[in-house]
Image (cartoon, rainbow, N blue to C red):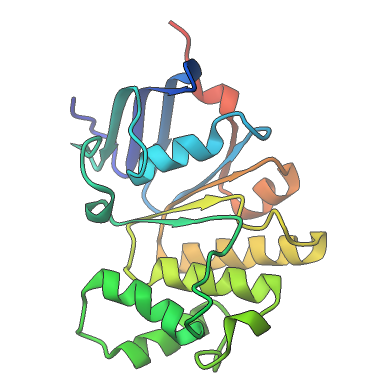
Length: 218
């Protein structure tokens, strides 16, 4: 199947879980540079949808396309799609710079020295000079910014955000939502952001959809 839609297209996707259908007949498009927020309660399938788009989970039916090319069976490491979780999942045995350097190794791009690129990424997420910091000393907001920098290091063509601010207090959550929106717009990186928080969705996204809106029963 070939789509003429630029960016991401999800067509007629079905996801089963534990013998039952979790999502069915899911359709989603994300235009180049667009940030789309998906709203839904816990257990509704938001995270499973992101994992299918990222390539770390296989859908039970349907097609995932990027710029019209079918990537449904493309391995995750070849999709150039970044994924940020609610838990930053930083490597405790590496400092901040080491965590970001891990993302740079995934990029396999030596045109810019890693130390210089790490500094650029830290500036980008508002943490200049943090490269030598022990990750255990970071606040929740700082850790999430480092996770974002690590995800951006391989220059993804799409970023997936799986409730990345859910563990933060309201003020910090709102501030980071605005910062991430501005950063992604400045970089021209499209994104899918899933959350159960309408305020957060409105702050971060160009378009807000409920998960139920994606399903088109036949």
